[in-house]
Length: 415
Ligand code: CTP
Image 1 (cartoon, rainbow, N blue to C red):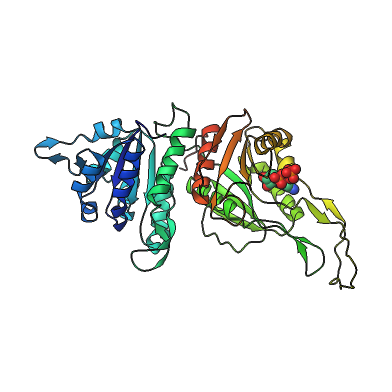
Image 2: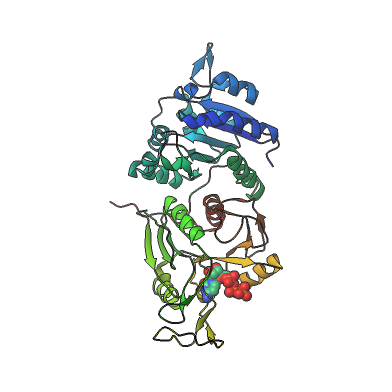
């Protein structure tokens, strides 16, 4: 997919810049044309000479070199995509506020193509409200953020802040060109999620048999949580209704509501749905619940035990079929056979705008994995098959698919 594509790679001064050489090699191997613009401090971590050899192009650092004027407008115009990897806290803040004190920022400000940003920094810097706000600001302009990964950091600390691996970035770019409309994949994207209200469900539900036992499932809630983070980063006001999970979320844009049973989840969703613009149901809701819940722990007596089950309410179907004008509804489908056929049938049955399908047959997809492989189908049967990637990146793909299909709402500016 990258054959003939023009990738402008922006490199800023992080230790992760050492990965740029591998990234350029991978891009060139895929047939992409690569040009590099880097900051002065990035040259301390990766030499311009090696990057120039690998990209087969001169590397751009200053406005002028060897009495040549490096035209920032031309570089921005040339690119099909501007990938900024690694993006430091310092450069992110300059991008967010237009502090144009080097060639890299001038290129960023004048580029018209989609911008994809892969941050890299220490965990406390990444979590600092300033960085979170800067990333949100850049997302609000339509830039796409590739969330930093968890792992060992150059400081010796462990946590979130590692730049996504070059292989993941290449997979993401491949899907970018494969799945997006040809007309829009080389133009700066408008963020239509900004200011929208989103209802997201996550996790399993637990259906009690007695005070000790319940019927549950293996869902971790991870997909819904990373989706909530992604939608909040893009400026949505998120209500996350989650079943039992150990996951934490610390994001001012996400209001978390904990529930236990399918009935609790149903009631909560129904009570808030009216004000929502986006409804994304990723929870693995129990389809059945015991008819009677024993008030005391059921004792074993050597005999078989029968638990009579009744169906739960299908929250997605209820919200989909009763959706109001302008609401956009996304469902998930986890299938083990006839995946596409079943997913398309679910779009009709539940009146969905989009369905995210994952198959338990795919290695690395589904429950309790950090990765997922999805196919996204819309109500017009347009279908995009994505590569296996981290759930954070799947959330970026899902948000992009939603963004392409929803209406832009002009925000009222506060006086
Ligand atoms: N869902 C829901 N409420 C339920 C069951 C499912 O909101 N009681 C939602 C899930 O969150 C998911 C979608 O419906 O977005 C698909 O769920 P799934 O269990 O795959 O499909 P079902 O409709 O239950 O159909 P089947 O069991 O036949 O696959």
